Every structure is written in C-alpha cells, then in structure tokens.
Image (cartoon, rainbow, N blue to C red; front, side, top):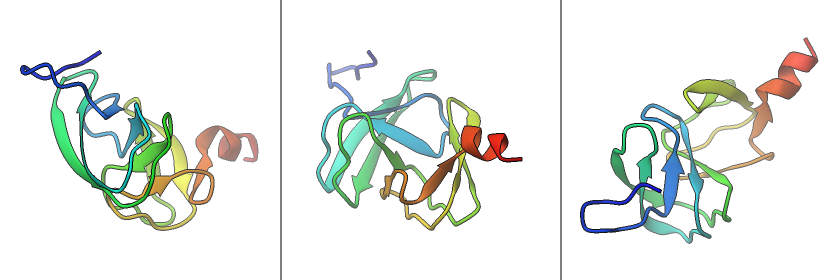
Length: 104
C-alpha cells in the first residue's frame, strides 16, 4: 500500500490521478482526511462532508447530474444527482455504467 515519506498510511485511495471518486480504506468521518493515488503515488488532502464507510466512494471533484463517474481512469457510472467535492457517492446519486449499458 502507498505510504508517505514519513510512513503515513492513506485514509483513502484513488486508482489514478484524475479519477472523480476515491475509496475509503477505513470508516471516514466528516472533516479532513489524507489519501493517495495508487498509480502515481500523489498525496491528497480532502475535506469529507459526510460519513463514508470502508470501501465506499466519495467525490474528488464537484459532480453534476449526468456527469460521468471516473474510477480506474475509465467511466464506471453516471451521476443521477449532484454531489459536491467531498460528498458521499453511492446508489442514491449514481447509476452504474454497466447497468446503463445493459439497458441501451
């Protein structure tokens, strides 16, 4: 797992720089958290607006209804509502690209 030069362990990971969501590697409470991208090793400081359970996602950028959700550097879903940077992302505001493509 990625660690900083001082041995700090990330509280969240994104797969690569530019992903619009990150994944909590622990239960996160609202407030400041630190994490890193797996591919590039870039460290980020974010402010989380809601509780985010282990393994769940939050927005790295502001997202509007209809925006494409990017994870692993590829589109994985579509926003069904708006989310601000740091908001919890789950089934209440996103639709899987896999589900959407199976309905086309």
